[in-house]
Length: 181
Image (cartoon, rainbow, N blue to C red; front, top):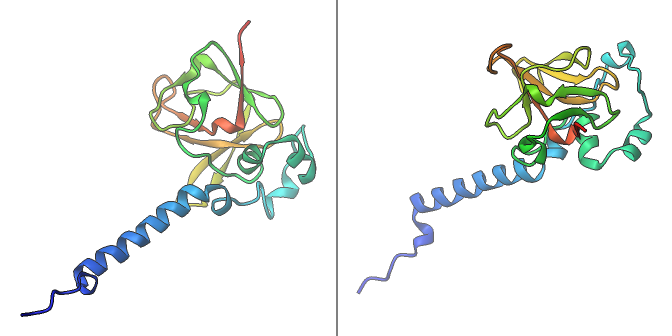
């Protein structure tokens, strides 16, 4: 009588288990460590001296003024997890402002559901935001920051609705909402 084969030595099964474990580890790191692994200092290097914003604070002051998640996004150019912000579902009339300095950024009349999991707008308020070229993911994107304090808000893409055709895809943690009275 032959001895039953140990399934752990099956090369196909072993390869599937190993590749599944590797994939699970990558997915786990991307979800668990989004703040730690995707950050870089805001306006680092040679951009820092050329930048001037009306609202400035030391790094220590920003850390005191902001929550850890706000700091990671606004000051270190992080990205919050998709579908995690209550502001993605905000439907009241009002104004979306910078969580760092209170600068009014977007009117609720320009907000739309992009299905991306982040609050999206087709137009900012006048003189509310600035932009920079961002190549951190190996592709060129347009980063959007608060015109008043320089805080990173998100990115703008050209796949939005009329009349502008733009989608200002913002991190909800970088925003506050002030309802109309």
